[in-house]
Amino acid sequence: MCLAIPAKVLEISGDVATVDFGGIKKEVDVSLTDAVVGQYVIVHAGFAIQVLDEEEARETLALFDQILGGNVA
Image 1: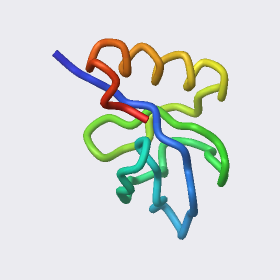
Image 2: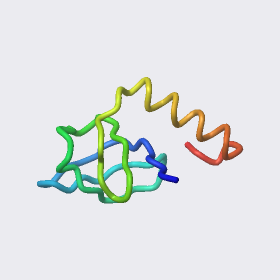
Image 3: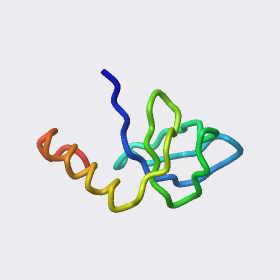
Image 4: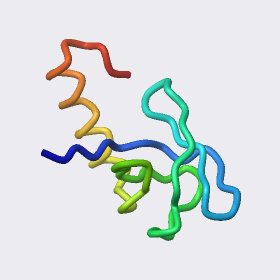
């Protein structure tokens, strides 16, 4: 099973972006997308694989929050 998580792009340097997974910041490779700072991306295995509409990202994060019992920002 594969799981891809929405994250907000905070900054980009070359092909590496710092993203926020609801309070947890990580570096991911964004070379597969045209992501810009402020957008949401779907991240799988350290790679941003798709730019995601903000509304859809928030809906997905809300679903994760429900599933995990309120432990997701």
